Image (spheres, rainbow, N blue to C red):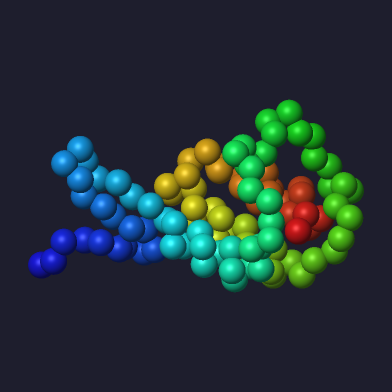
Length: 100
């Protein structure tokens, strides 16, 4: 049996110090799939003091598209646990109908 390199979109790298996992390729595919190549990157995904409400969205979006995006980002929390809070907030039924 060969050494594991990829499993379910997760790259596995073995080093003398241990095993490293990465979803870089998966993230790049998401950026292109959801046409986010011109988005600005930030160090912190969401300000912890930010208050969201269901009426703060300015544009309507296709719910299926939004659900696919949130579902894809939920999968990223496997290797990026710091995304759990903002993704959970975006996934909550209270806000999901308004934010795109």
